[in-house]
Image 1 (cartoon, rainbow, N blue to C red):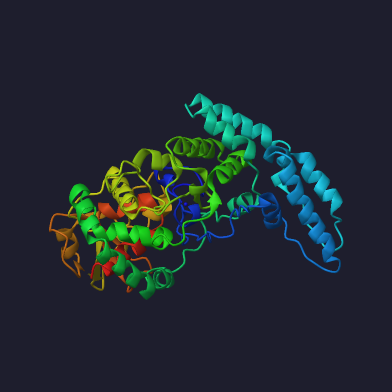
Image 2 (cartoon, one colour):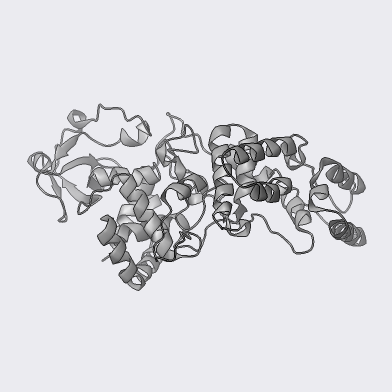
Length: 426
């Protein structure tokens, strides 16, 4: 989410895997369950949205509930969509339903009278950046503030510098588990023709593409169901990272101008979308057509999604024919204090500070650190990482591991991607 949404925005903020959550610190990447998003009913869509924001309870007198629902339906049929979204309608509905009795809800920030004005400003900015008037006029009047999005954003962990770093092993066991490995192997074998072609063109290993896909959306099965336009407009209105989310909102409108309908543009509450969980601006920059049909459809087309993942890795500096890292054996007596990394990374410093100094594989061997599998050459540069401390599993990591961190700046995430990739191709 994060070299990105948990603090200052960095390059890797353009991705929103796991619901848009990333960690600058060394907490485990926080999962956001991508369910319970907008549910557009064919009869009364905003009633369901209102219920979702303000849970109601039933008691005696359910006929009054039916009356309210019928009123909602009748009004929706009678008036325009825009009229139902204004403050006066919601205030009137709140007055009709007593706060005590068989129905209870709270009119939340969703009904803020300031939001329509802000949405209009977003529309004006979009027009200035080349978005078509037809798209702006179709989207802006229908936007509502989504309080659930605000609540989720404010509940993110801050990754404070003094936060204790948990053990990696429990995270590994739940994220590189048999179910994810087996499903990844099935995808890997079933898509070998496509994957091998993309690897030949980009140098990005087939297994790495599959592992990213598996970690971000469980191979496309959990992609999020929040309306991107509404979620991103809400986050822009909230204001903590207004410039970032204004850019992403306008990018969403540009995606619509490219022919992707709004109903297809669903994702996490933080705006990550599709099988790879790209933020919209990153999709515009790096989305790639993988099957030659002239479109880069990362929502339903596996070829396009995998080609787009590979395109991102190429753009981030992936080196062909170099592993992300290899497991290592560390001989007793290694002076770890002499190997502390004294260079502070400009991005995600706490993540990178846990890695040792860089040395060649030959230099590591002389110090008693040896690779347990082939892949690294004598002159390759690597850094030692023991996430759970001396005497626990260790890895020699290459520059390609840093590329995985660009996707999600968390050692938990990057190690799990690498380990899942290794397991998928065996």
